[in-house]
Image 1 (cartoon, one colour):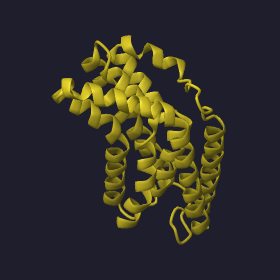
Image 2: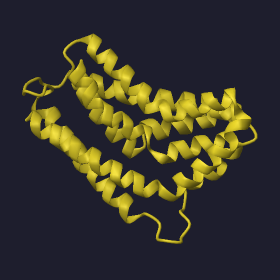
Image 3: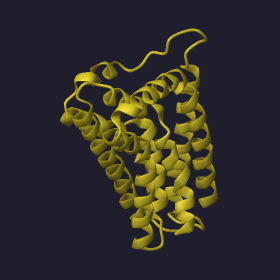
Image 4: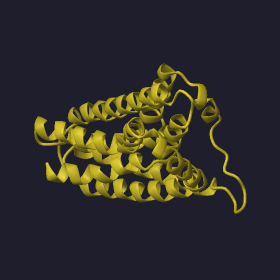
Length: 222
């Protein structure tokens, strides 16, 4: 179990510190209907992570076994492909970072967050968690590792740890805001501004590290 948890921790952190969902959460928390929309977003984010990692864990568990790292040659090759895609995404993020003095351009869907209903917020969060290429690749990597776990208990524990860590940076601000909304307004706005200006750099470094880590695990499992 310890090996599985250790292998998935960096991947879960990769999703947790992705700036865009954190920025989206903060924007919703600063909106007029903050409580309803943020809870919907949090629920969709949790559901998306659970669906993605469980789906690929189940897929991994039926792949041909073999190899010292578990999961077999097929899983090892898939890991290496996923790692290479993460590295390519890292290069894309780095090349797309804003130039000095320029204002970063955020996705157009963020402009609608102020008036988004809880249902729409939940669907958006689900898509960001389960369909977004960066998060999906990290969930694929984690699912392959969890699915190769020795026992069902190890697999269940792996999924639980992955979901808790990956969702923490969205769940924690929402829960904290529901408890102390007035005190958190100013710190959340400061954090939002910092994340907007450093989004591309953070993701480039993160994806590069994750990519080479996944490639290494795939190579070791051959």
